[in-house]
Image (cartoon, rainbow, N blue to C red; front, side):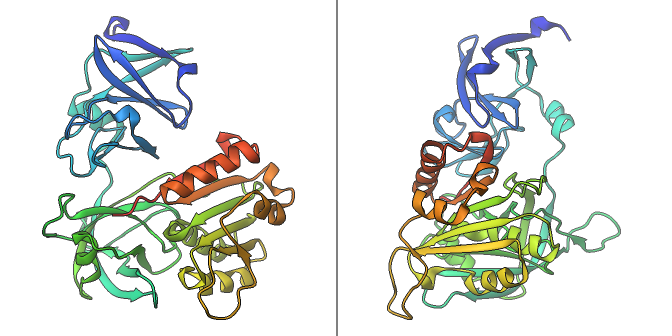
Length: 370
């Protein structure tokens, strides 16, 4: 392939890992993304209503448009969340030394499938049970772990995933919801458990109302798993989890997995909630902390709810609370942050500016709600 088919659009030092950079290719705006040191390129104009993807939010391999929340896989350009209906054009990227070069023409469908495959498989999972957390708007739904849809010998295929990953759930017809019937949820169960569980807040949106009304035995289409928000492999480095509200779901999966597998990794979780009643998995976390000598849970609440006097930490997660419980672990830990956007922004600033944690030791997962 001739180098004349590629044009240099930027230098490596122009684009940080997990960063976004807008460039131009013959006057056409292109968005560059770097994830795990690899560079990807998409048409920068959202296929929905022309939003600027370079101003969007990058989460793993997904870019979310800042205008209406459409999401696209930066590797394939495929729509992963509506309202967008059409994929983004993808451009092949080469890196030569410090130079970032983009192919002058977008990739064909055949080229994309050859590079990454046809995407994650689709499963059909049966709803086993629903459980609402008393006095809250939080609900967990458990599905069977084996899919009814398997191309080989019509046998049930297991839904395999790594602790911390997410999947897309298609619950069928949802009336009056412009985003349609598909949303992505972190899988809050562990691969060591015999069910697939998602846990979410039930809001007034048509999707959430339909989700909460699903009856036992119904089958939903699930595509996945996806996501890079998973435990690091070097167990000599402690994992520090910072969670806010419903953002605790991937941490339940990771903690349960580490406990069941007796992984030799130290885990310290700081779980921030409005009050004690909203600590979603407290009984389970306390039980697992008693079994797992490498696990420590620090709860902090904003307000007491009138029950038994609270003896744990109070207020939002801050430098004083972290220093009190981390000791010297902060110097070599990997930090995982999951929660709503304001919490992520605050934690990112706390870690980088106050604790001087380098970006390569911070992993972030965002919950925007529906």
